[in-house]
Length: 360
Image 1: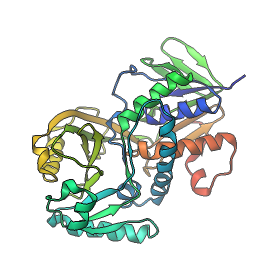
Image 2 (image 1 turned 90 degrees about the horizontal axis):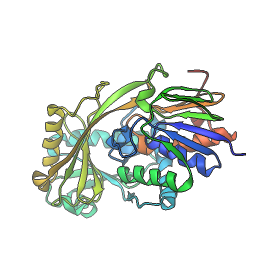
Image 3 (image 1 turned 180 degrees about the horizontal axis):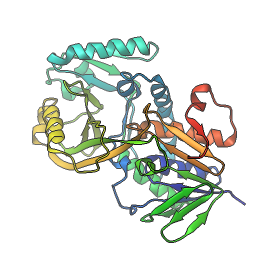
């Protein structure tokens, strides 16, 4: 008889884990408080930027970069097995800056070369920028950094494809079901208490009452419809305040974001953040001036003190959390490590470091 597993939380980590467990032979039940059609999950606020070096290279923790680099081929292997198409662009990313911020870009490049000398990165001039991204030929950018091993995933399409795979492959899903308590071998909803061989808590920020060091980091994102802009690569604009990223979503939709606020507010996008993002992207390509605002998104990303993922575990219960800003980047590799942990495989010191034993 197959072992039973409950996955609580239908963000990218929960959906991916549910599918992987099902394909490993478990009888899987997925719970989420939102309806199946909802876009409220934090993962729907993600741009899908798969950028371990440009996102993590400036931070003090290289483990995120190493894990992120290992995730990209995992997405490549998974997506062809899903029932709906999901675009994965892995032709690199570009970091650019206007002239007043070129010195900051140079500092970023020097730091990348110093901290990750074996990872490919290229300082590029205006001609090379035009070759890599023809849409920027008239942008006026004179310098940039090309990171050939980065890219993006159509995050919304991936979420829908994972959900459809659950239906096709026999994952039992309880959307619109509030879970009041998650414990070893047990999930308590508003209607009943259910028992399982293994329970996996993937609720993200909603699990903060059970993970004392978990905090929310607010992010704000704007989706625009810009048919006059034909970007193929994800971009980061090194800005006076913070880097602005622009990620293609397909169908002339672009995700624009940057904000990373130490706030647990779930309120709507603020006027201040919206104006800063739109003003910055307006300067990247003139076609953005005619773009229509498609969607405004704000949510809280779950993070621990070191901004690295953790898997807290005890017999019968695993709590996977702390993916921070890197849900789509890190979810495949963290779930791969979790499955290896369950199988009793030998892990490296780095890999073992994300597993935290004991009750929480």
